[in-house]
Amino acid sequence: MTGPAGLGATFVKRRCGAAPQFFAEEAAGLRWLAQARAVPIPEVLAVDEQSLTLVEVPPLLDRVLAAHDEHRPLAAGW
Image 1: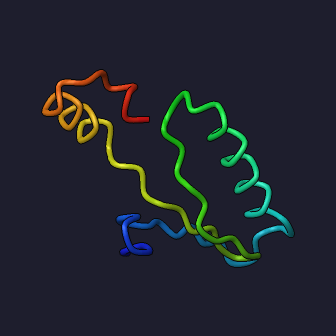
Image 2: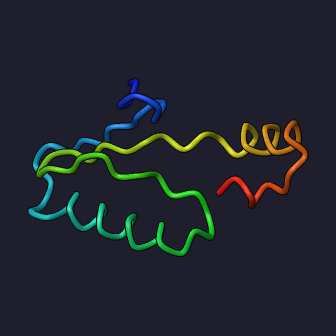
């Protein structure tokens, strides 16, 4: 799925019958982890009772190749 302009692909995680606050708690955890900026964490675009929409994180190999092509350390792109 394509995300908002400039954000690339998105990933939607759905679970019918999810416990109340299931996705809200996951979104809060992802936002908390993202603050450390230690590893790539998908940006939360939307959350409701039955789904969580994220910006898709490219596979590690894609990031390694892109860093190599740009002659920069891998961590600099995070």
